[in-house]
Structure formats: structure tokens, C-alpha cells
Image (cartoon, rainbow, N blue to C red; front, side, top):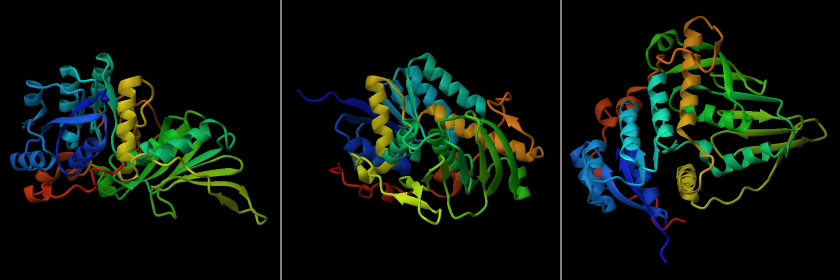
Length: 362
């Protein structure tokens, strides 16, 4: 008997939405059945490119005719909430979205709550937290392979703390096995700090973690770009790639880098997009913990908002969860409004181009 397949709809088919479509078409247990895309030329082009005939201008129109098992919401931040809630209310088994998940904490709370109330798996998307090597390194730490955690740090946390900065917070929480419970921050330049978005905002400060650690945050240039966690004799360094492992010391006292092999990824060319989606499908089927969830995206946004307001209000300590859920932090226009409305549109010719990765990848 053929393996049962989950039906999938992609809501939002810009550049990233097309990448989601490529991955879902590659997986053996998913079948793409519909596309919702407001741009009519791109909707036709993407439908032709991927052989999808059920094409709709938006999620509401799609759900009047079809309810897939899985909905992948790949929209600019401004439109994510409406599509996620519509998906949950329509009766999908699982819905995913990407960063930044929103701008206002109360809006993200509503998404998380509606999905929980309806028993809908709410997954995050294309974040390095889902990278198989990051997950495996976190498993080694949880198992105690390197001893008790003694410290953590975040490097180059600036520019877009609610967008790309989500990556840092999601990985930090995973590797440190802790939540951020307090934020103290200093922000520059002043114009970015006083803006309603985080374009160009550089944050320095520290996070207090639920395991008692104090995590320094470096917004300015350092030799590294990601997250370090360490024990008495080991350092795990995520720098936008599979984590590097240092264990023990040489005769001069310098750390020794070790080559501990990772389990090969099933779909290496798709990197953490594939591992995120595979985790999502597995949790829909079997339950368990997502590699990246809507809750993870909310936590990242909340830390970013706390950092912005701590710095704006004079580096005041802010405890998390924040009491004021009306606080907001907007990303730059491209992330919030999308390419079409921010001056970086994708043409229909570009949307018809060959996939970034071959469908036979596996």
C-alpha cells in the first residue's frame, strides 16, 4: 500500500513561499493541493511552475473550497495573524509560519492560543534552531555529555532583532536549556532606538536566564556572529552553521576543537527548511516537541521587544513575560509588508524560474 500523504497548501508564494513549495514537493509523504497568493501574475506563474491548479487570491477564498491537512503561512508579518487564525478555524491539522511572527505581543498570543484551543499544531519555520546539527548538539548538552552549563553569550545581535535576531534567541534558548527571564539593554544609534521598527538597531546588554546564568549580549562587531554556551571544559559555538565543539585543553590552556560527527541530514540541500518541516509533520502524526514552534517565535519576539524598550527607557531591567502585551516592535518594511509593497517585487518571470534545488534531492 502507498504511504498516506498529508495534503498541503502554501499561503503566500513570494520567494520564501516558493522555497517551501519546493521542499514540500520533494517530501514523499506530502501532496501540494493549493496555493493562495494575492498577486495574480505570480499566482499563475507559481501554479504553472509547480503544477498546482487550485489557485486562490487569499486564505479565506481557499478555505471556502478546500481545507488541507497542513497550511504553510509564508506571508509578510503584517498578514500572518489573519491567515494563521483562519487556518486554525478552518480545521487544518497543523499550521506553520515564519519570522517575524508579528509586531504586537497580543496578536501573537492570540495565534498561539487559538491553535492550542483547537488542537492545531502550530509550527515555526525556516530557523537554524531546526538545523539537525543544532538539535543534535542540544541533545548532547541535555544528556550531560559535557557537564553542567556555566555560561552563555550572544554575538552581533543587531540590525534586525525581531527578524534575523529571532535566530539567536531561538538557538540560545535551545542550547542553554532555559528561558530568558529578564532583559537589560543599551541601544544605538538613537534614531533607530526611537523608531517604531528595528532597522539598524544595535543592542548590547545581558539576559538573565531561568537556569540562573547571566548571558552577555554583544551587538557590535565581535569575531563571532551567533551563540556560545560553555561548561567547565567544553564550548559549543553556533555561528550560523553546524555548531563547533571544543572539549578539553591543550598544554598551553587553549581549548581543543574536536570533530564529533553529526548524523547526516536526510535532505542536506534543503538544510534547516527540511528539518523544520519534517519535525512539523512528525509532530502532527505522532505528537511530541517541535524543532521550532510558534511559541519559539513568540519568545524571540518578546525578548526583542523587551530589549528595545529596556534600552529606550534608560536600560531598565524588564522581567519576562512582559505584563504589557500591547508593546510592539516592527521589522523593516520588506519583512513587514513584503517585496511588492516595499519596492522589492518579484516578477512573474522570476517566479517561473527553475527550482533552487532538484526535486530528486534526498
